[in-house]
Amino acid sequence: YNPSTGSSSFADCTSCGAAGVTSGNGKTQATDCSCSSETYHAVASTGVAECKACPVGGRCSDQSCGLASSPHSCTVTGTWSRDNATNHFRLTGCPAGYSLVNTVTGSSDFSHDTQQCLKCNEQFEY
Picture (tube, rainbow, N blue to C red):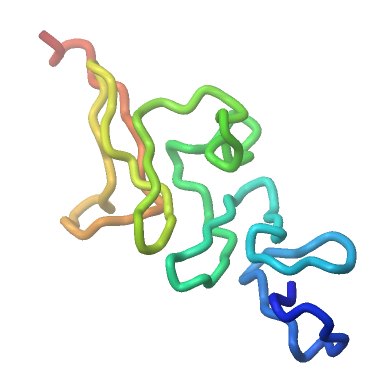
């Protein structure tokens, strides 16, 4: 896409980021970018656009990203919101009977890709 109207040079275009494309001519905004079905579109507060891999808990049964559209294109468990700076999805809560997972096993560091609500083991529920 090219935010500068009247430009005709390909060099003036701004990338949609990895896996992002625009369809047709005359696209002027980062929101004109579209992503593959396994990703969702995010435009950071800096204006940088990207196609972000869908977190595990945001995927539909066909592995497409349920978070990519509003309303979600399939049932997505949990409460999801957008980070103000990056515009990435963050899982902020899970329903009763589920545990919020957002780290890689053995680490306390946040991991965007692992976010999901895991059903609790029934023998431990009370």
